[in-house]
Image 1 (cartoon, one colour):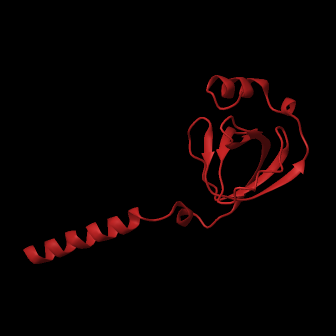
Image 2 (cartoon, one colour; image 1 turned 45 degrees about the horizontal axis):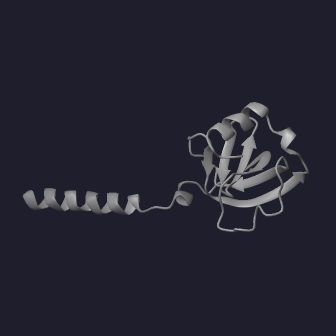
Image 3 (cartoon, one colour; image 1 turned 60 degrees about the vertical axis):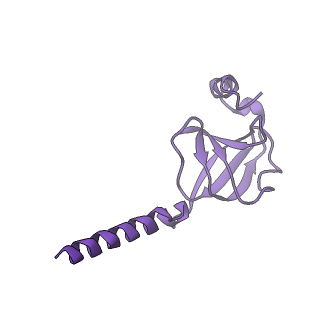
Amino acid sequence: MKKNIFSFIAAVIVFASLAGCSNNDDLTSEVVSVEGRFLMGKTGAPMIVIESSGPCTISSNDDTMFSEFTNGDLIELKYNGIIATTYPGQIHHVYDATLIEDGDISDIDESTLEALKEMGHIE
């Protein structure tokens, strides 16, 4: 009986450790798109300001994905659907970014810009 309990516990530990090593991309196979205004952060970290949920830092494995955008451009992101609930939010798995229309910094809500300045994300 003790041998069965120890075998069961060992199996649970192995399963739990394997599950803990999963990649966030495995959590969803869904690709979601969202539109927002592009903003380059103070440290060179790109951001998107989404009207319904606010600003998010964005990252991708492609370092050149955001190089053609300027502050205020309306862009569409395709990502894995996961946004970390911090302020600003964080989108880590961007697959594609497309320019919808040229914009200007004045296209971004002033209170959002002020909050990001106070937190040191933009100049």
